[in-house]
Length: 112
Image (cartoon, rainbow, N blue to C red; front, side, top):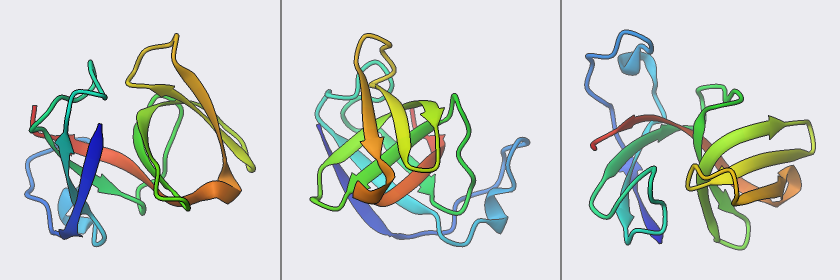
């Protein structure tokens, strides 16, 4: 699995649950490979934002300070650690220290 971070974009409108036009820091991400199945597959495009607060159950993209990338569903959130279900499968859980995170963004749109 790899992700390619695009430059900042302004996403299109059309979603009722989020005012995408008000999000100034949204980034486009292209998914390469199938390491994020069943959440995302090769060729999917994602729009993520670090400005939109993350909540339990949200799909998130994390870029670690060592440049590793993690994608999954947030199942635990504390001040110093996040719990992620990798690829959306509960059997693949991981904990991420907040101090190791370079970028944390909520997936606000996917091109599936």
